[in-house]
Image 1 (cartoon, helix red, strand yellow):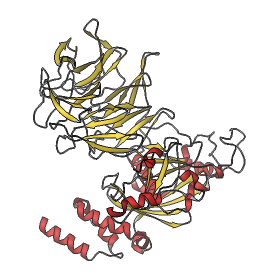
Image 2 (cartoon, rainbow, N blue to C red):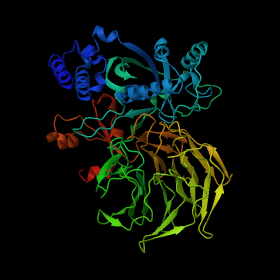
Image 3 (cartoon, rainbow, N blue to C red):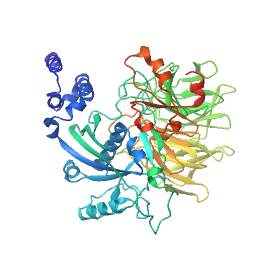
Image 4 (cartoon, one colour):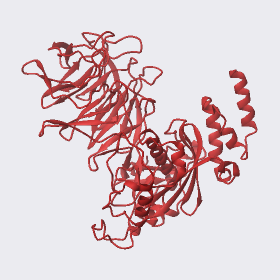
Length: 587
């Protein structure tokens, strides 16, 4: 039937027009033909101003959302695409975590606010002492209390509004269509302004074509609250908005890959993308929010770790999708080439790796039968492998890190069960000893020393991918529950770059991920948005019709937004953050 299906799709595309595009997009099973679906979506997005006025779009289910703004300037500068994507994320959480169904979402309007971690939160749970807790919010809360509240298995703590209004923006490369950040079943197709501070979005929610009616409302208290101290001496309507944009995604979905800090950048390589093990290598530069490609590895490998030592990156063991590997390769950053290194004493995958005192420790793993107890150490100066004391418990997919001059092996799996046990290796005595167990047994979790504490991130409990974290504090000598990630991630990798702890890729339990998020120390929350630093410049340009005029569009339209008084009047569809020196160098 493939040929028949293709001819039918060609026929529908040939006769596609404004009047029938919604009916065609509503066809059952359209998501199975990705190319056909993308063609229809592109047409709807292009003609959405006309499509949004037709009666057939009114026949779709409509979710009503109101979002509070702290200033008129914030309302005038809103980027609807970014806001609708935040709304989609909020709806997903309501369905998956709050146990709401589609009927509940259609019953009433929802009033939301942007919290300090740049997520959307329901105003019914806004902290009572928040300066934005106005009469509008109080009336909404009273109405919400009358409705039965769903039971949430994973209640997030209540988050305050930021002290200043903020504008969320999208980043898009010149001449390249922005990739959908959501799977086809959860996707923003088009958005358009339909009135003063009102917008209409066409989305897919669980595969169902749905509209979202969005209204922005100004929420400024008329008089200061007697129980709170004003955050700013200026009225809210005069606050200058802060700018935020989304953290850029990797080019590939990856889990069980190598990840580390290389010269204060995020370095990832290999991994598994649900189809095959990868050789590709990428590097994320936080200052520019850009990923760039690096030389590929010599061998495809997944279920492995890397070690970064003395400006060299070591990829050790793993699996090529068929067999466990003993091979080791090293990227010398000075020459930009991967070279073969001495192999492991035993081929295995899902081992833990860390560096300590200029040595690389290779802990446990899997050889196709059981969790391995064997532990080895590599000396880069002599290019030789040696063995150290074995683990008490054979384990694979354990989180391994160096802390206080010791090697920690945390969690993992033996042969059948996820583990919560922790073992610590003391070099002086060449012995492993048991340590305080973590709270939740988990495998495939990430681990890093951040803010002088051990952070254990995500993983799987054997049934579900986890978004929970745990933190070990040396002062209290206890494991405590840490902040919750925005996305569950098993086989996740983590790395500390600057003052951020990044969680990269992994498996959500449903999808292999190309997204990253980071832990913000100030709010102690995970987020997928980055702020515009005061030393940065926003380059605003219209998307060119072709690549030929890309350079011209940059030079003609670059501007310092901080110096623009009427920035809200600018028409733009792409914003990128760049440092001033980048512009001065003509990049």
